[in-house]
Image 1 (cartoon, rainbow, N blue to C red):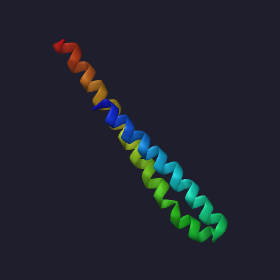
Image 2: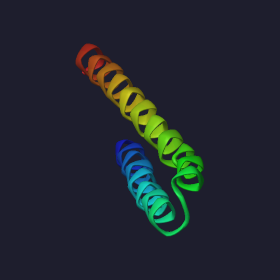
Image 3: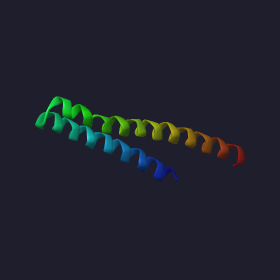
Length: 71
């Protein structure tokens, strides 16, 4: 399960970077106002990355504590 959680964490980081590059391209190719609309996508993906990272760390800490108690 830890591998899947880490994979999804990296997935959201990749989505955030990819959509940021796309937003920057739209800003360059179209206009600043059009590009600003595209910045919602990397913002949401970044929030998902942070949420997944915090959740993964909490779950791993709980799992480690459980393993210590029950051997």
